[in-house]
Figure 1 (cartoon, one colour):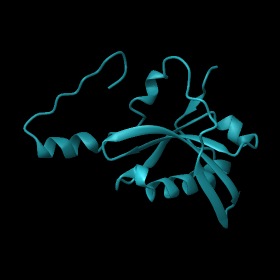
Figure 2 (cartoon, rainbow, N blue to C red):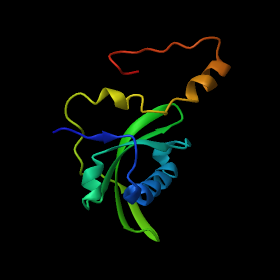
Figure 3 (cartoon, one colour):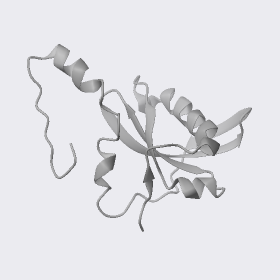
Figure 4 (cartoon, rainbow, N blue to C red):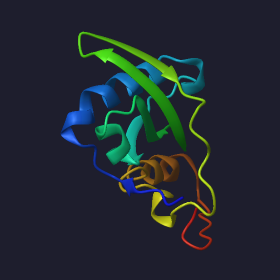
Length: 126
C-alpha cells in the first residue's frame, strides 16, 4: 500500500483539519505543547468523503502522525482519535522527517539554551 503525502492541505479539508488540530491541542496527548499541521497522508481519500484524516502534527520538540475521525459540520464538529486506520507498512517516506518548515525555529531556540547542539542525520531521517 503506497501512501501519498502532501505538505499542503486542500482548501476543502482545511476546516476539518483545523478542528482536528484544535481538538488535539486541548487533549492530554499534546502534553501542553501547541501543534500545527505540517503534512497530510492520503488527502484524496478524505476528499472522496472519508471521515478519517491522517495528519502529521509538529509541536514542541516532536512530530507525530495521528489519525482523526472528524464528522459533523463547520458549526459543530465532532472529533476523535481514529483507531481504524492501520499504521503505514514499510519504510516511511523520508521527506516526512522533518516535515518542511517544522523545525525552522527549533534549532535557533535550542542554540540559545546550550553551548552546542548535536544533530544526527541517518538516511534522510533525524
